[in-house]
Length: 261
Ligand code: MG
Image (cartoon, rainbow, N blue to C red):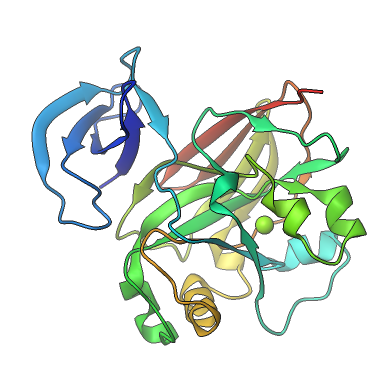
């Protein structure tokens, strides 16, 4: 099952996405499926209809939690040692954008990078969960781009500005519940050229360990999102680029890049 959030020009609604690529249909749902059982309204809408726009599949209620250096080859390319415990940071929910929304490069950075990541959407209030029970707290999985102002990340000890600016957290195109995420390709392409080609099997701390660790720090709320780290191959994006992040079995998240100054 794939669950999307969409608009036809009015308030956002949710839908199951059926059908093959290029011929998908939105099977409209009542309410927000994170908070109520999946219930169809009976309406179906072609995804490619002119007035249909996919939105970020979730707006985090309280936080996006990021994880630094969770792939050994990425830690190495940045010249860092592997951490003994996960390195957590926060991105505000105002950083979230959806499919096809522009990544707006901040005028105070001159080196902004893509980071292809698997994202976890929390489904239940969670505190101090064990790794063994962590996946029971998950609503589903989506694709994220942990857009990072690399020059600011190097210059400042806190990553708030480097990773928290508006449009620095593209999410989408939809959420897939019940997915086995132990062995999925994680890719980034810029203007069609592959930049990152990793696999979730290369994570230092797996998804269950990350949820358990984060839940020792924060109460996780339904709709909160955990970004699980990026594989090697991060690199710059500039005005006019189109960046695609793909996670196998989920889909492709595509965003144009613009500079407005
Ligand atoms: Mg990252």
